Length: 146
Picture 1 (tube, rainbow, N blue to C red):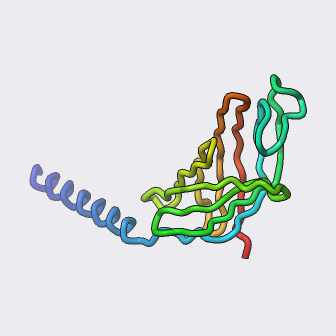
Picture 2: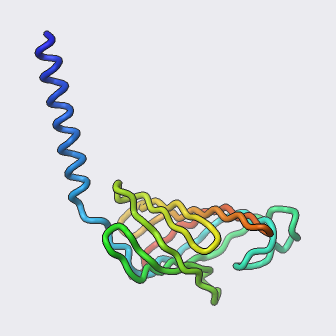
């Protein structure tokens, strides 16, 4: 009985190791290109991407169209920019794709993003920003333009 349990445990451990190696050998997704889509967020205070119309004290619910441009990628790291689709400001971003090939951590000059690839050409990009004069939290659903 003990021999069967030990053998079963070794087989399971071997299968898990092989599946981990298979994930590690897959290439990272190529994310270069232009991604556009709607976003929903809450803003409190004055931000570089617009002013809170209700003043500095009350949070404002906001919906906008956003753009993410990935210019260059090497393995699991990439650089680019993001901003409002109809805006002229584009903030530079740097990012890293986690080993699961779906989770991405990004930063710009004043905030962080946690991003999940939801498909080969779709992603959800969620932002947190805290400055001395503002707070922002929101998510965007972006699709790569072809």
